[in-house]
Image (cartoon, rainbow, N blue to C red; front, side, top):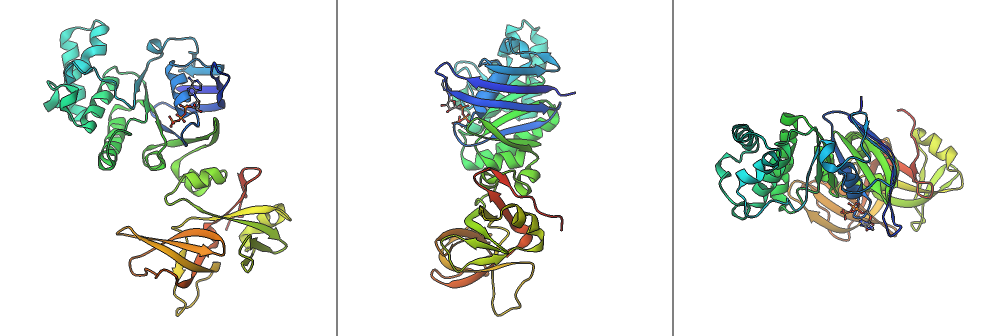
Length: 371
Ligand code: ATP
């Protein structure tokens, strides 16, 4: 049984702007779902419709098989954590966390026990008497989460909860939130524009663009089997390299790099047949390709392409190497043991298994044959 069911959900704002189109999804109890996509793609709007803070223009929302379109936020059994934390500045941490329970008229002893238990989960026991302004960003964030989990709701909705934290705090809070989720076990829907957060936190990711869901899947699936070029380019850092090309008989010809013509490998027979005479996008991830040493035997089962080195970026553990293939710019990862000089002429190896083909116009990834 799905705990949450979104059926053909659409949102048209009062000004006529269609922000979300035909959103369909079943979410199971206890899942950690991340909505991700660029600014304006409709992820917050969808979250707010689930929370009941925005009307659903069309479609049905079920929570535990009950249609809740018309239910008030309070009666939906959901708790929301906002980007801004929305803590009461004049209340202590204890009072902030207790507030919802006090409103409900719960007995003081019960409230105290629940606040203490929640504070323990969140590592806030030493801060209960402090005001929000006396806390760090990460601690404030934990209070905001505490205020949500203390209500013992079954669904948490979080809208960019880590965006006010610095990079280091974000990494810490990311793992804390996952641990809290494991302990509490509540279904969570988490909105972010950060693909790293999505990849590291989600059981399943929903990736959106311009109001449309592009793909729903486990992080592994989105990374290895992206549904289209947008998903392939959004997931992964640095992003996947794309080269415009066209299908010419047995060859893949790179546009604006007239001497680059690659043979279709066996595993691309279907791409070759389906894309005859068409434009294609050739894609590969920076981490899948590598510079080769021409004094050694050439690697097999992949493409070898001439490149000019434009720039290197030393990251410590790895090096990003920016390269030109004719007019095309690509990035590959290298190691600290092979940092080329700017202007060097080198070759890169792109293994067949790391190559993707996209139909940009139709918006899909060509399937490959099983190896
Ligand atoms: P961000 O990461 O920037 O918050 P988002 O993906 O969460 O982006 P939404 O806030 O859901 O995006 O907004 C989706 C689209 O709907 C945007 O183009 C936005 O301008 C528009 N929008 C949001 N609220 C309203 C409103 N009240 N009236 C009209 N349009 C709105």
